[in-house]
Amino acid sequence: MQLKKNPQLDALNKQAVSRTTKQLKTNLQLDALNKQAPSSAKNIPPNKKSKSCVGTLLRITFIYVPVVLIFAANTLLLSSGCGGKTKRSEAKQYVNAMNRAQQAIYAEDGTFSKSMDSLGLGIKTQTTNYKYSIIATKNAAFSYGVSIRETKDITSYVGAVFLVPVSKAANKEKTTVSILCEANSPGNTQPSAPILKNGNPVCGAGSRDVLK
Image (cartoon, rainbow, N blue to C red; front, side):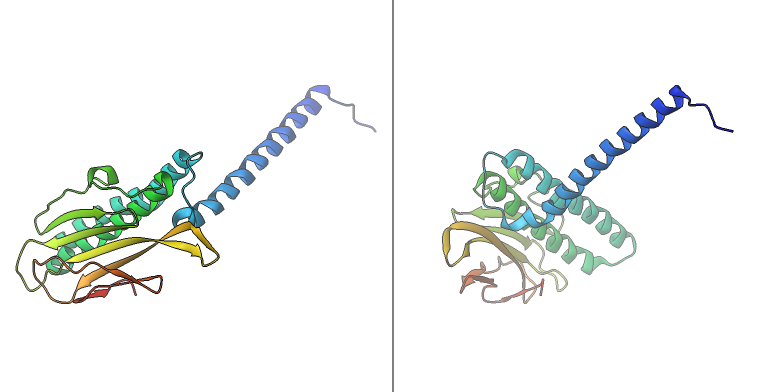
């Protein structure tokens, strides 16, 4: 016995196939964008035609989300009694976030930020234990988290972002490299600024690289 064709059922099946195909195409496009985003964080030279979308994506992905997690982690550490580690963790994470912000801002605007407010992180210039500040030039940006207390469990931090050529053959194309340094000894003295050595950032005298 042969089943009769149902025009309404055939029409519904065609619509379902069409919607599935469109959704699949959309998902493929989103996958492509997601794969491109992480590799763009440090190595994208400034492109003012697309800076708005790229810069916003970079800031949300690599800056704002980590900073929110930092605030939450610090609160949990304080409540668990890890006082000294929490104090140092605050400055370490904040200065690292400031480095990331400078890299994203350069990727978007082709220049470094010269004020804490324009970093868009919501970090106060002074907290209970640290004072935060930035210094920016044409080719580098320095971020400081300096202790305001002379205690044995609080050390100061400095971060730096440098512009370097993408390759020896392409001196005009620039990318950014960063470093985070911790003072070797506790105190409220501002650490020496990092420097570039053979194209690589190194910590200044009296401090060490804490990301290695």
